[in-house]
Length: 138
Image 1 (tube, one colour):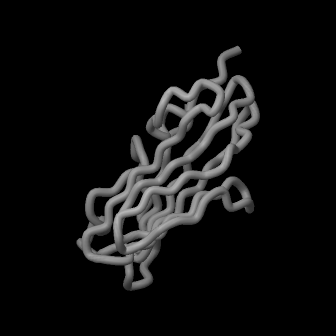
Image 2 (cartoon, rainbow, N blue to C red; image 1 turned 90 degrees about the vertical axis):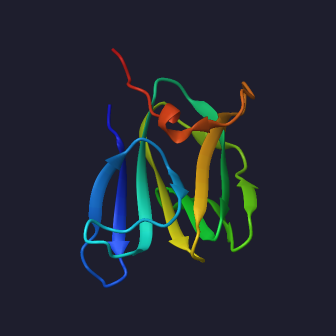
């Protein structure tokens, strides 16, 4: 199984800092290892499904803009200084491996963000993006 990767670009234009993480969420704006605040963040969420799944992505946040993409296709763009809640239309996630990209830019001093998904067919409520990643067993 592949893991979620976060790239953090510092405001001074230095190279991105790369780290693995277990989810896409913010409670305050991060800094790099040297304490420099981030200019933007980009997460790569590897999706490996054993069957085609119809999903809906949801973002809840404040003081950020967020863009979700699969390949070149934009799935959802949202963001405001005030608290917001946005949801994508139904998205087909085919069986096999694909990636979801989440790009985040801060709009204020205290950004927060939660990105989740739900299975449209099951309507089982929002789940962490980490649960969208599954190993394809032979």
